[in-house]
Each structure stands twice: as C-alpha cells, then as structure tokens.
Image (cartoon, rainbow, N blue to C red; front, side, top):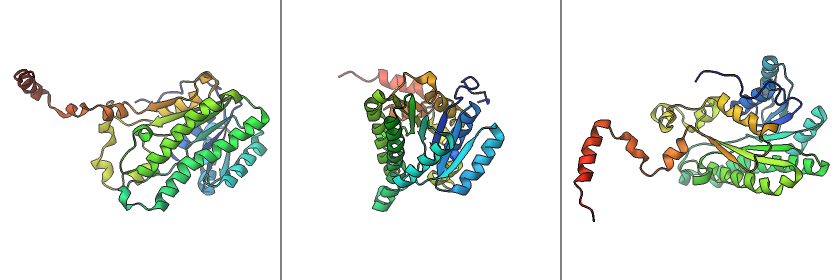
Length: 293
C-alpha cells in the first residue's frame, strides 16, 4: 500500500494533550508521531526513560511538536499518579489517554507459572485500569468534558486464543472495561473506545511472538484475506479519528482493523480456500451424486 497523508485535516488535534502508554516504541510511537503531525502535544510513557528520551527527541525533530517523556510502570498506581502530575505540570491539562502498554509471549499454558500470568495481566489489564482510573477521576473531579480513553485490545479478546492465554484473559478484561465505562462515564463527558488490531508488525512484539524461524514458518499475511499485514499509518489514522472531535458520537465501540483475519478464522468452512480450482469440478460431481436423506 502506498504511503498517504493522514485522512484528517492539518491541525485536527490542535490544542489537544494526549498521553500514550507504551509510547516509546512500536505502535505507541507511531500513534505519537501521527498525533503530533496533527497538532497535538504528547506525553509518552514506559518503564525505560532512556528509550523515551531518545524517541521524544526524534519525534520532536521530525514533527516540530512537543513531547514529554515520563518513566512510568503502569502496574504501580503510584507511578501512574506521578505521571499524571507531570503531565499536568507540563501542559496544564490532559485531553485523551491511549492505553497501549502491553506484554505478551507464546507458550503452552501448562508451562506457565502464576507469575507469568501476573506479569501480563499486571501490564495489560491492571495497567489499563490504573491509568484509566487516575485520568478518569481527575477529569470527573474537575468537571472536565470531552475527554477520551482509547484502549488497544485484540481480536482474540472475544474468542480467546491458545498459547497466549494470559494475554487473552487480560485483553478480554480491557474489552469489558471499555464497554462498561462507556456507559457509566458518558454522563461525565468521557468517551471510551478501543481498537482491536490484527497483524501490525513491530520489532519487539513480533520477535517475542514469532522468534527465529517461526516468523517464516507462520506467515501472518497468509491468514489475512487481503493477503498482507497492516501498515502502521492505517492504525494511526483510526486512532487519530477516535481521539478527535470528529468521533464525538462514537462511544463504547471496539473497532477491528485486521484485513478480515478474524472473520476468516471464525468461519467454519473457511479452510476450503485451500481447495485448488480444478478440484471444485470433482467436488461438485461428488456432491450431486450424493443421495438426499
């Protein structure tokens, strides 16, 4: 797919302050850059300050925008409270929270310890809860309206998935949190939505999920009806829209962006895609020769 400009007009996020957890690398970094190019000021957080500082410098140079790097372990609510304080001290406000911080790895579940579950659920679910509560309570106490929470979940939050069970459990919780707060906090002027991405390659995450030769053996593009993986710009356009004023009537929605991968896996007979064209004549002949009951 050819690179294109953002679907939103220049300045669409002018004046907005957006906080992105997991914003130093991967999709979080890509979203930060997209928001900056649309006029937002951005805070990026993760546990590694040196990574954040390097990313902030690169993004400011590339976009001319303002980036605040803040080290924060989202599993620790005190860290989250301090992060919010730094955002308010720097910018005086926060308009949107993007919960992108995540952790995942592949493993047969019987090989996992309780600590493995605790780690992933701590980052993905409790990290999202901690940040959402901190920002939500602040907005509610101050009576601030038109605020947004955007969560990054996954398509297997609905169905579950073998070999990534801690992540599936955590992401299902994020899905429930998104829809629950969309109803409960709408009266405070807070919209809560989520994105469920399919395969969007990022260096760190994909090295953990498909290490070594697995990335060649299990070509994710082959699972997608469109025959390719996603480009970061496609996801960042969607994220930009969902934190913008243009989506002000969208609340409690979880938008799947996966080229049809999830639907392909859900269809009971989708495996028939593997049937060669020449075989279909023989199949039709066999079916017509079958007597009805």
